[in-house]
Amino acid sequence: MKQMLDLYSDYLLASFSQTSATGLSNLMNGEISHDQVTRFLSQEKKTSGDLWLIAKPFVKKIQSADGVLIVDDSIEEKPYTDENEIVCFHYDHSKGRSVKGINFLSTLYHNADVSVPIGFRLVSKTEEYLDPKANKMKRRARPLPRTKWHGT
Image (cartoon, rainbow, N blue to C red):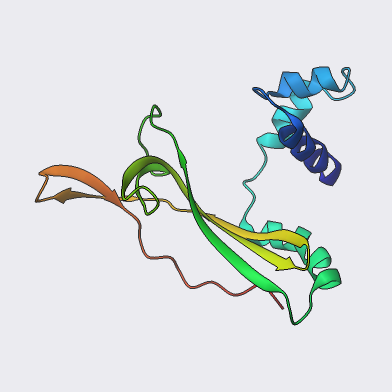
């Protein structure tokens, strides 16, 4: 599985156009079938904890007192996608307005010239409510549960 993860990640990073399971299979001259790629992608969803387990050995090698954690809040705009719990309106501070897209938090450990991704979270707005001012249904996120820090 780790080999497929590395291969698929490299494929996504190196591609300049649309990506697909068939595209990766073609690139590998059929050594990996598109069904193998599809099964890999259909497995259990990965979590921030899974990422930490992969990143932890790298962080341990480069960590020092000068290292910092960088937390970023980003929105990947999806103006033409149907709205759901993940793709919905989020306030974009850089634009000063709400935009439709996927809002995610990412965490990097940075030391010297190296940055390692160590965590992520998608913002999911699962609660619908009626906004009395606009008189229309809107979405909001439930507060995040307190989680154990995986940095030990």
